[in-house]
Length: 81
Picture 1 (cartoon, one colour):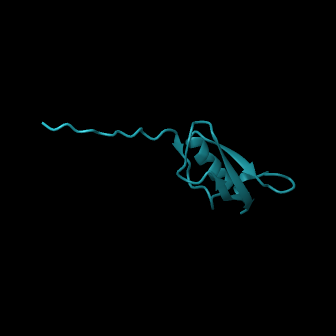
Picture 2 (cartoon, one colour; picture 1 turned 180 degrees about the horizontal axis):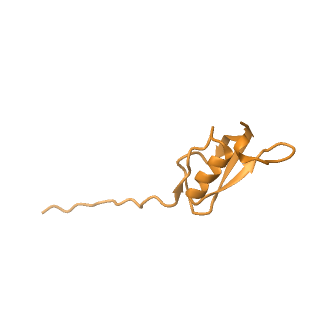
């Protein structure tokens, strides 16, 4: 019998950040909630966001696929849809 060394990687922790750029704000926030994450909305103009369905996500941080812990926040930059 031969002696072998095995390396076991630790399983990925947390939730993967979904790809949200180009989506309506209401859809993006629903996807974040489903993943156990929160959204920090940046933008919205002078009056803020009155109707989430009329705004779209133009940038996000962190990038899609990043792993975050439950309850962590993803920054969403928005513009008029």
